[in-house]
Length: 120
Image 1 (spheres, rainbow, N blue to C red):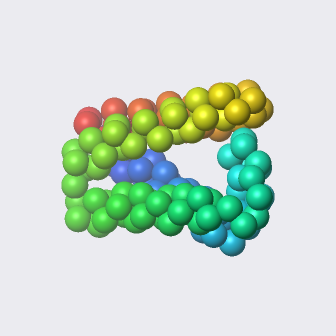
Image 2: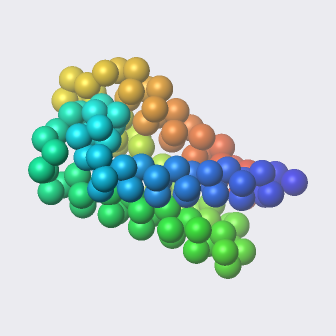
């Protein structure tokens, strides 16, 4: 049962990061503001971030599709580094602490819970 819940949580993480990536491609300024560090609309790095987010989410989908919960757990564990560092980036650039803690680091905690469930 924990693994099944972990698979659902991982699917949620995958879908969410794909949607965040799409937002970085379609509405880069809004996505950057929601990230916690506003940037200009024409910033090419925002598009690069969007593509990488989409690829990360699709990789989660690939592992789900092929029934690899343990490998997915390891991927989620390693990918937890992303929201942890994202939160540090927001703080370093004097972005809102509520975004660093309430979005980025809360995501990291959710991902660690997901990883734990996947390891059953």
